[in-house]
Every structure is written in structure tokens, then in C-alpha cells.
Image 1 (cartoon, rainbow over the protein chains, first blue to last red):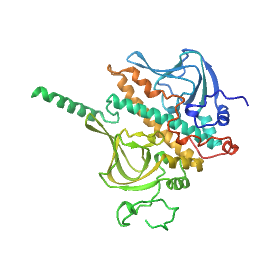
Image 2: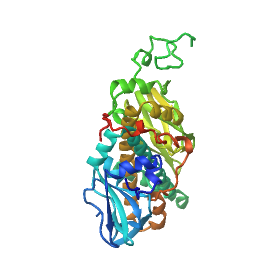
Image 3: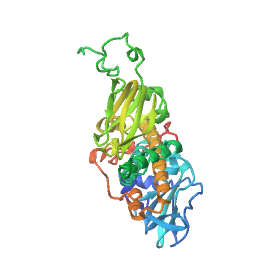
Image 4: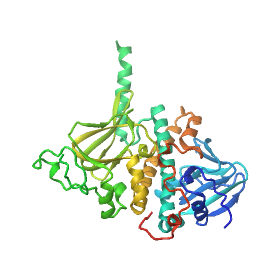
Length: 174
Length: 216
């Protein structure tokens, strides 16, 4: 068996080289060109990608402008949220330069988890660790930017905004 | 607590009076939410890796900023999750039986980003990272199902969080560069070393092609 080109870090941190070699067979490696659209915001996406080589850009279009969100490097992955919560993609993804990706479908992930439970657990642990890190950073950003929690109803948000405005208005009245 | 207690039974601390409300419930993890993919047998096994604890209405389970490395499952009762922004309390959610708390800090110990208070007398089951490590190493089938449930929960919460951030992005005051930190996770970062080597080694048994009930 040829050596896998999958990077042994990131979501694969808990897999040994032999397990990575087996996992490799459940996905496909593909070259991608700079600028080639891999994922489009709003489209259904159910594939897990791992960056093998190159740089992949994640961005979003807000108010007509491209907002750069992240550069993904070898070992980074994307699409992990949609694997477990199938939904439309929340951002665009394209290579910044000629790159190489490894892609695994939901069906193949299912097969791998079922057939190699130890290695599957190791992969799941790595994915959960990554999700936890990303959730922690998202929560930190929400906190740092004082973003009012989106769980609140519009009415509650309005009430909160009115209460805040009333509080801020008090000094001028006095 | 007497010393000849049957060790196979779940540990229930401070069980004072069997005539009182929650104490009369059969202690067991609910096969709901994050645990919904686990079989009754796996749930029974998992429950022995954590502890049950009763809480009264008004008890604070943890507060924002508290170092948090435990994972909780609400077995019974009702709790409220809230944050304080600019001194104002915002309720994020109410959690009842089957809901979990602290699933992100279990793998990435960090200060809690919200507070949790008990609304109605509740019983919670909790486990720490070391217990999870032991459970995963000994019960790979149930461990896989637990990790799968956890991944779905984390994915849903991350999607919600990203949605909030994206709504904020559309406001003119948004500063784009800070978004990079939220999405990029360095490939080399392994966080705490607690889980290192858990599934390592070249033991052929670990790569045996067998069937389990892990389902997406």
C-alpha cells in the first residue's frame, strides 16, 4: 500500500499512520485549480474535505462585498458541520492556488465508522475536537462583539434595545 | 454512603429520603438528544463512568467564567442557560431531560461562556474528560455513538453561532478580520494531551474490519 498523502494533524490527530492509510481508501484525492468554486453558499453540501496541499480560501459575500473568513492549509478540513447537520453551505470555498483535496462522502464515512470502529472513534474524536475549537472561537467572537444572542425573539430583542436606549437617555433628561 | 454498596449501580450522592420527589425516579440516562444513538446497554454502561447529582431550583450549576471541564446530561427537571451582556441577562435556552451542557469544554477545557441555573428540581449526570477517555478506550461501539451524538450537537450549535455572526457581519460596523479566528483551527493544534495515544499503536485488532451500530 502506498503511503497516504493525508496530513497526520488536525482532524486526523488521533489516527496512527496505518489507520490514516485505511481511511484514505474511503475517500478520493483530487487536484483543484485556483479560483475553482468548490462550495457555493446556499447549496446543499454533504462532503467532508481535508486539505492535502495548497491553500483554500473560505469567504462570504456580505452587502455585495467578499468577506474573507479563513485560509485553510494542509491538515485543515471543511464541510464537517454539514456532514452531521445536513444543510446548505454558509460560505463559499475556493482554492487560492493549485491545491489538492481529499474528499469523503457521508456514505463512505458511515462505512468507515461501521467497519473500523476504533479508527472511526479516533476520527470522530478529532472532528469533535475541531468542532469544539471552532465553537469556542465563535462564542468568543460573539462575546467580544456583544452580539445579542440570536435565540432571542425579535420582540425580546426590541424590548432589550428599548431598555438600553432608555437607560442611555437618562443622563440627558437629567 | 455505606461501603458494601453494589458497585455496578450508578453512584447517586446524597440520597437522603426515598419519599421525596426526584429520588423516586429510576436513575438512568435518557436515550434522547446527544445519547439518542446509544443502545440501552451502552447507556447503562456509560452511566457508570459519571455521577448523578441532585439540584434544587435556584442552584447554579456553573457560571460564566468558571473553568469548565465537565459534560452534563439533564436526567430530570429543568435548567436555564443564560449569558450576561452589558449587565443584562439574556436567556439562551431551557434544557430538560436529554439535553446536554458543557459538550464543547469536555474536549477543550475552557471557562464557561454561559451560566446555568436550575429552574425546577433537577437531576444531572456528569462526566469529566478522564472518564470519557476511559470509556472510549473500553467501549468503542458506545463511544462511537456518543461521539456521533456529540458531533451532531456541536455542529448544530456551531451552525447557530455562525448564523449569529453572519447576521452581525451584514451590519456596517462589522470588522471582517476577527472572523478568521473563528473558522481557522490550526492543523497542528491538538489541545490538551489527555486524549493523545488513545487510539494509537499498530495493534491489528484496532484495525479489524468489523461491524458496529455507529450510524450517521
